[in-house]
Image 1 (spheres, helix red, strand yellow):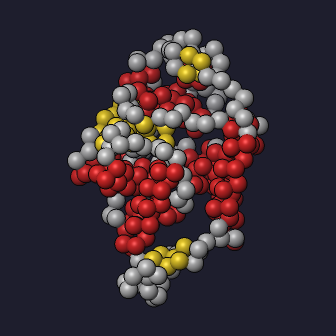
Image 2 (cartoon, rainbow, N blue to C red):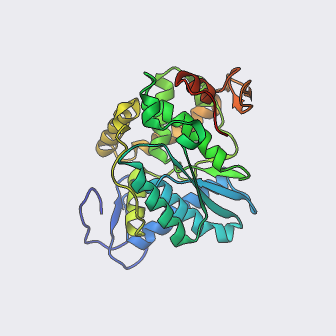
Length: 301
């Protein structure tokens, strides 16, 4: 399948009928060979960046969407020969009419893989839901949610050696462009915490969708009601249009971003937050500043 079109040609790696064509490489693959290619590419990314070591406890941030459940599926497959364990951590932000379905899907899929799944909520940790919080601030929904979500995931992942998030190549490029347009060059060069890994960082978002489809992975299809409120949506549309017109442009941008990131020094140093003790780039961390803006007295952590 490519853009919804069914192919009559054979797979380039076996004798089965092709089901997917990678326009940027011209390679046509059946569902099984396509799935194998995604698993292998993920394994190479993990190995190249030394993301996971034998014996590690890997906490996978699972939202109930296609990316996170596909990552859980892939890491579950790789964990046996990789010699590490996998568990899921899931956060309920408190978005009425949206989050309940995703949480049910996450719970059910983890049960099907016999994977431990721990959950928490913004209300439990911060004493407020996202919807309530957005009524107290003029800040963007994604920026508020992102800050609180990262801390919630870290709380659930206490004791884990690494936290795996399902950010794909599209996410990686979008984040770089957001930081570039916002003038935040320090984030361009800053290495993420060694505890946070992104095994899908070299895989197109569209390929993850097909991986989930081929492997029968259930996921929430309804988008977050706040998804179109930030700059990321505009950048996503632009990049998808460019990729449609010039296949492979995302791959080229990813390689360029990797080279640029290696050359830009980290202009900020981390020190313990004066209130909660978590790493911060100033006297007070972004979570505590966000809670101040929301007029939330304290974290329940």
